[in-house]
Length: 101
Image (tube, rainbow, N blue to C red; front, side):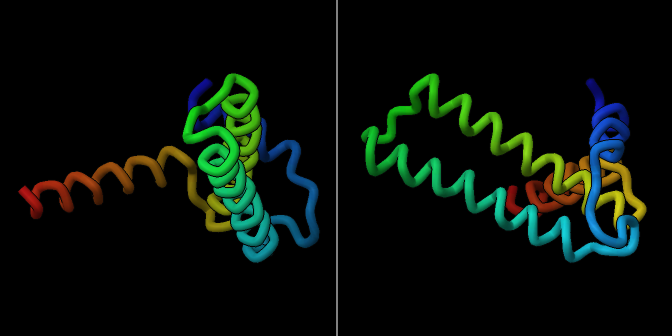
């Protein structure tokens, strides 16, 4: 699946108030889901000595998917594609890398 296919599929499941004029809702959802990822990683350190089990990897996969969904929804709200966001980010990182080299 590519970014365009993902964003289209994710868009079809987006049911929230004032869709396409409400950046706040998916942004708050993104923050919440990112917090869930961080909480799982915290528990990996606390409860498993830093070892990622298959069960924990599956939980992270699930939560990272939720993060991706909210990123996609934020991009939709801004009239951007995930591909545009990814390309812009790679270009920004390349410039930063070149400055540091």
